[in-house]
Length: 273
Image 1 (spheres, rainbow, N blue to C red):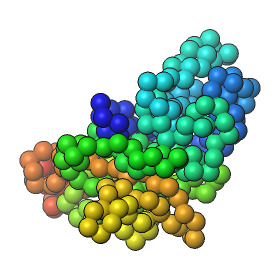
Image 2: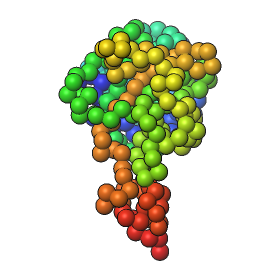
Image 3: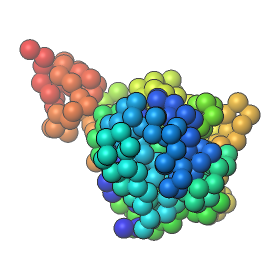
Image 4: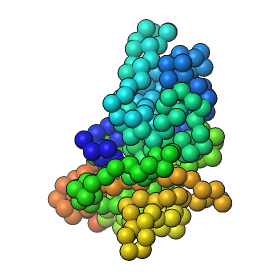
């Protein structure tokens, strides 16, 4: 698998971002190492909601830790052992047990938001951007071709309470379109479908594109909100992840009705009983 090409497991629920766990579980100062995972603070946080905490940790490790490495935690309360696999390696110092730097906090926060799905389902995505050290997440032309739709940019900081934000990296969806990736790709600048993610409009209005005008890159160097710069993560999706009322399939995001809008789609879902 090409680094940055996330083919599975991008279905973190929005609950995973709203528990404030990254600021209370002790990992921000103790790191993603054996020592960090064995603290009383982490155990207390984990056992407050085991199912949710295990899901969050799966994506924290996926985002922060390099591919080929794992992090293991044996719950002292239940005796159950969890092993989470690394992938993107966005926060190498934190992964090794150091206190998370601000850039590491930002890029891991953005990565978690990028993996959040309103419906909690797995949809293939491409993840692009830079690590906390400034290294580009590798990508290929075939990856960009396969994931041919720009989707969204994600930025913010879940560790310090600054908030987490998203913006469209393409035009807004029209009334007949819908997608399971509604946390990023929106029909309006004021969408609030995936709290605590706040939709901010268009990436192009908030972010500085990497590269040059003659050689633009498919990711952003930084996004700015309220005068603060953040290191973002950018996502791409396949065209089939954008559903169209009138294509003959009643998608789970569509509803019966009498019109052509996705939430009143007679052509695909029929009239309501």
